[in-house]
Image (cartoon, rainbow, N blue to C red):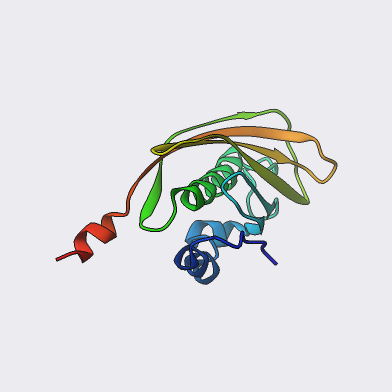
Length: 149
């Protein structure tokens, strides 16, 4: 069960619940545990997300990180606004070939127009596998502009 903050935009909660965080997050098996602008946690299975030599694909680390960074930024942006990624990078420290990985997303900066998060991906033993840093621009939801007369 995902823990949502009490003041979270109901429309965002509905989108997260009905979409599972989006088609890619759903396909990768990402499960949200805790969601807020300041700190979010999610898990993802290694199985089904490996590269040819059988270890968790580096791109899977980034997908997990970007998913959490984007949702956390969207929560911070608030109703009528959206978060769009403008920069992401990742450093991979260790590999894993089985089990579940857990990502913890922590806000570095939560501004009016930019939000930056650090996402640390760890294995079941708590070893740091990768560090992802993501910056999102926060702007008016373009769907809001087209909805106005």
